[in-house]
Image (cartoon, rainbow, N blue to C red; front, side, top):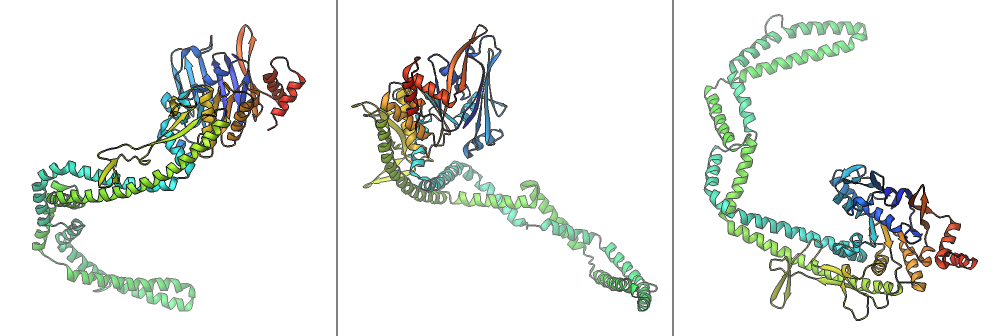
Length: 567
């Protein structure tokens, strides 16, 4: 929701800070008092084009700042993080306009105005300026239809099939593009395969050869050293083993006298055993030392062969083996290219049949949901004073000779374009007058009429529309009496799901507000200022009464205002 709005030096506003509440926020005031200026300022943080003329006379720049909370939706969070902005439960949008430039900020970080507009489009719908009405964007209609109908599972099944077809089509396209390259490289691959297979490197072979080479090159040293060590430890006179045995025996005698020597005796006993084991190892190793110049030469030749492969096919032996696998697959593919293409094509066609079934199932359900939406919205429009309104959810499919959707009509097959959201192209159409054809929603009447249309649609789709904030301007144009009351009741009901800010001059609507603000002009120090203030409960009665009777307030008008304010 829009928590606070700060405006400084914008048109007639020198400084304005307003805190909005959840529910229905109504704004009233005399004509020309600055309601349109307030909306103009709000449109600045929605990314609208800025004019230097909006800077208040004598000021260096105009600043408009909005604080939104409960804004941490997954879509918005992903958008912010993707562009390197901090994402939290609160978001700050700011616009600064001077004589020389316009600057935009998201969470106090500079950003392009286009990105500010994109962020704001996830937060707020301003009805009165078409470019901010999400329902006038055709790309939102299908999502609203699916959300209302609870079609997430059917859509997910379709998208799984779509991803499978997309993968297979991409693989086939890549393969076809590689055909010439593969055929040209086939002989080269055959030569490389023969060379690598002739040498036949094995994983880890280099490490084993290097270890064996070191041993063979140092055979003499290994033989002499192990013999010398064995003699020092175990064989001959006064060996290490003999001395440790003497120490062990002495400690054993001492331990019989004092148990404090038990641990040293146990450790020395273990040391004697360890020395004996080491001596045995040295003796065995010495007997196995091999003097084999021929084997050493063989290892050097083999190492040279492996080095040759590494110089030609990879920095390491693993790289060489990976290269062999790759060219082997490429060679097999070049040898049986037509077969590979045929198999991929067969898989793609089978996947397209699955996709077609999922698309038809989803489309059929969408049409059922659309019929229900049409009935509900037409009923709402009639209640809002548009008795002849006709709402149509228009479906279209795009024929495409290469499309993935394959529909059979007898023996004939017609192919249609498949999109990530299905085969349907959906757009909302509307006719507001008797006898007129329904036209795209973006081309219907403007002003209060189109705002009432938006109100009706959003009332029906309220629980499924994810736009948290709705701003209505001129929604009461051309209505009065019972219809005005119906409009107010619809807005009040819609405010259970969205924060609503409504500028109105009708008492029937103003009376139903949860929070009431009043715009007025004041003159001070030779300057005119527009101000906005929150009304108390008693002031609300006065404001609604003034909308009923004009400047001459009467007790009867006040009593009527109180009756209207009874929700």
